[in-house]
Image 1 (cartoon, helix red, strand yellow):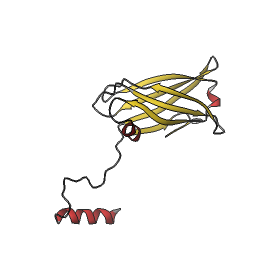
Image 2 (tube, helix red, strand yellow):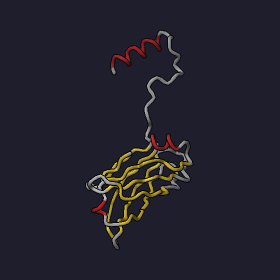
Image 3 (cartoon, rainbow, N blue to C red):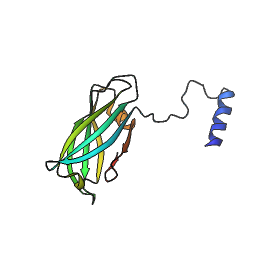
Image 4 (cartoon, helix red, strand yellow):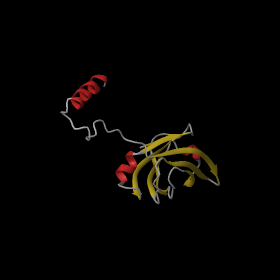
Length: 141
């Protein structure tokens, strides 16, 4: 990577590449989704998420298509969740109920972004950083 940067800097200084062209575009985390807690109540699993909007722009709607897998990796349930609205530079808490006990969930896949008022759903998916504080449940995309 260091050699690539050296070549790019040399080309920029030599005027062979206009400085207005973005050279190394990196995916920016626009928002962060954390699975914060999972607790069983009345034979249902209450999944609590923190959703952080890292931009100054409000997000009126962020609908995620979630696929829930059991610990053996077999899909158990799919659901669409609405994480919005989220004001700019804010973190919100959202809780959703899934069928069965939490011990029956081994992973949650963010299968797709069904809707994103902040822009293109693919960009919203790419800009979504994920983490899980629940050690028994993996959160991934």
